[in-house]
Length: 225
Image (cartoon, rainbow, N blue to C red; front, side):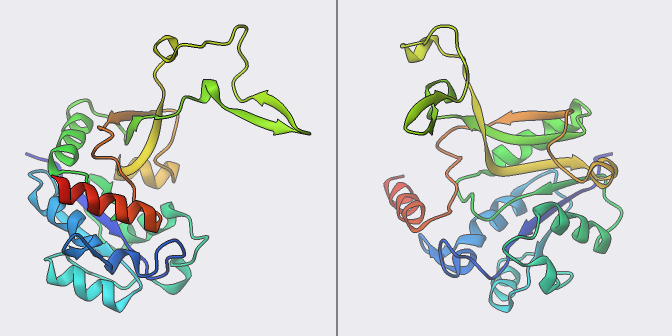
């Protein structure tokens, strides 16, 4: 029997980078709709819920078939609210699930294949925590801090590597998928632990909408496809 999986889509009303970001029209439909539609296609997700404090977002989510079992308290919808607190609050309201998956609405290019492949890997390998990553475009081996005008490498090397192909592959969190066993996330209160495994996504599916430039680039890319 398949384990019960709860998908949480977090979407508060306030956004400094892009006003009304989650409810804003993105290539023909609200940004949040892209995530709801892919989650609803999943063969593993048992229930998809929205965690929001905003009436406009709640209404839109319901129109696209997303469950809204509660309104997020204002104290959990501030700029400095840790994301894990939103997850733990949702798990308190919706009990009886073995896995929880966090799907941020700022990843409209994330597909149901990405979602289901990540869930399948997590379940089949009995992974406690898994997060999506993508290969970094800029290598930290070529990055520096500047102290009193002097260059200081972020990663100390005995010899500077000048060819990119000689550098090790490095990966960054893309913010698209976070999954964990419910009992483990309640204990650890974080998706990022020393037991967290990675799920690699393509750069094409990893665009995170954080600024108006991201918004415009994303719409351009969808228009080309």
